[in-house]
Amino acid sequence: MNNDVVSPEFDENGRVLRRIRSFVRRQGRLTKGQQHALDNFWPVMGVEFSPEPLDLPALFGREAPVTLEIGFGMGASLVTMAQANAHQNFLGIEVHSPGVGACLLAAHEAGVENLRVMCHDAVEVLDSMIPDNSQNMVQLFFPDPWHKARHNKRRIVQVPFAELVKRKLKQGGVFHMATDWEPYAEHMLEVMSSIEGYSNLSQSGDYVPRPQSRPVTKFEQRGHRLGHGVWDLMFERVK
Image (spheres, rainbow, N blue to C red):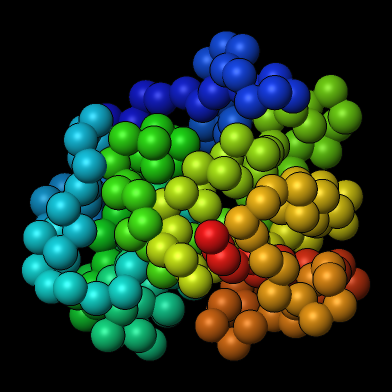
C-alpha cells in the first residue's frame, strides 16, 4: 500500500504553483488490529492508486449510486453510512494508514461489503481515477482548517478543487461539507457560491441543518459538549 503523495497549491487563477501537502502526515503507530486489517482486509476492500479511471461497477460488482468520502479519519461514520445504506456503494479516501486500518477493521466487523477504501491524496485520485459524471455524493467532513492565515492556501476547499469535484458529480449530485471552524465554513461558502453550476441547498443561502445521513462522530459529540458549533454545507451540481 503506497501513499507517499503530495497535493497541489494553486494561485488565484487556478494555476498550479508547486506541489505541497494539503495535510500533515501524522501517521502514528499502527495498533495490532489496524495492522491485521491492512494485512488481511486491504486485498478485499483496498484500492491501489493508478493513473487510470476506475471501472466503478466492476470495482463493486454491481451498478449502484456512489458516495465518495474524502478524508474519512478513522472511518467510523463512513462504515455507519455504508452499513445503513446497503443499496449504495461507498468509496473512501484517507492519507493516514492507521485510519485506513481502523476503517477496514470496523467494516469487516460490521459485515460491510459495499465499501472500498484508498490510501492516497484525494486530489490525485479525483483527477486520475474518478470518472466524470459518476458520483451521486462527494463528502468532505472536518478537513484540516489550517487556522493560521499564512496557511489558508493549504485548505483543500479552493475554487480549482471545488470545480474538480463538480466535474465528478452527476447532474443533481451533491457536494456535502462539514466543519467545526466557523472561519473555514465562511471560506467554504464563499468558494462554493462563486462557482457557476452549483446550487446551494440551504434555504437561507448559507448553511443547512445536519442531515440525518451524516452520523455524529465522537469528535463532534465532544465538540458539542465544549460548546463548539458545526456548519454543514450542501451544494448540488445543476449544470
